[in-house]
Length: 178
Image (cartoon, rainbow, N blue to C red; front, side, top):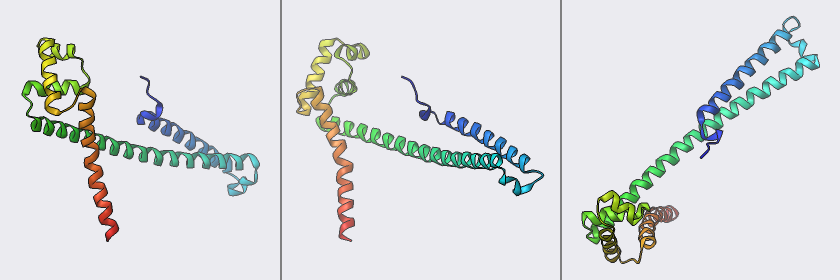
């Protein structure tokens, strides 16, 4: 999997630093060209264009730096949200496992099934026979009242999606009443 440059903020920061060095060089060159004539040197078309290019580069650097900071804040926020959702999903799974009365072995098998592991992989990881894992998985499905892995995962995801939406919807309706 290849990463885009935008996925690596260090690379973008380095690019902004290089652009800043270039802008400093261009500004130094403009000041050097203006030297003896002062601001009257801007009447020279070459110096005027060079000054505008340097100012445009500086504006672009400021824009890029602000945009990068905004993206980094957004990325941190989204990572926090994913962490919260992951924790909520884990909590929902454990609550369902307790409600269904799963044994510790059935908990493990259900967790491996939700993660997408095959029966053979689950048996290998647990040090059990495939037949044992199949029996435990069927017990999980029976206790959960579902017909298979997809339905089990759907049940858990449905609960995850309904939790925050219900809270958000009630908050919105309360806000409208005020």
